[in-house]
Amino acid sequence: EEAQKTYAEFSEWCEERSKDLSHDIKTGKAEGAELSAVIDEATATIGALAAKIEMLAGEISVDEADLKAATDIRGKEASVFAAQEKELTEVIDTLQRAVGILERESKKGGASMLQLKGAQNLAQALSVMVEASMLSTSEAGSVTALAQTSGGAAVEDVGAPAGAVYESHSGDIVQTLTDLLDEAESQLTAAREKETQDLNAFEMMEQVLEDEIKFGKKEMGEAKSASAAASEKKAAADGDLEMTSKALATDTTGLADLHHECMTKAEDFE
Image 1 (tube, rainbow, N blue to C red):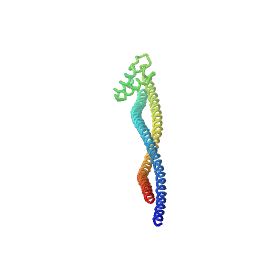
Image 2: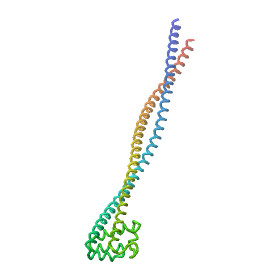
Image 3: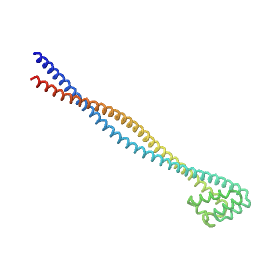
């Protein structure tokens, strides 16, 4: 009877212990499945974010290269305009002074005006003005260059024989220089308008590219933060899964050992 009581208590313990271990195993398996799902999700998130970061890095690199190229081009355009504006401003000043001088000298008469009346073309007229210290050599060269590139009557005047467009008297040289002055002022106006358009176009492009770079870097920062958070979550889940797996293995072994022990005792009792 005492042995029966002892076996009954042992049998009850076996049953309770088996229930506890079975519950722990079931719980461990569920927790393991949940942790595996967390790890899979975090791994997928990390992969997707890595692809996004790589894409954003490429886009930012392209935008930065485009901005640098556009800035370099704008710098060259600005330099060309600055030189052109300086040259035209100087030749306009030269032409204004030359016309004023000729108009004053024509009223006074004199040796210089007699020489101008003998000039056969614009080049000769400018040479006379240089000799008379009305213009410097460089100023006369600037006027000649403008006449050669401006087109129209002014170009024909350069080197034109007497009897052609340029007639040999002072009135025509004044008119020719006045025409060149109008041409230079038109070129300067056109150059300034083009510079304004080019600058506006660049500033618009610059703003678009800077915004794209700014937003791209912001988005990349957010993606990197999210990736770091996902990596941290995955690492924690990996650690938890390792502990859960060890506990599950221990419980599974414990349950098998329990069954063996209980079966052995039952056989011995019988």
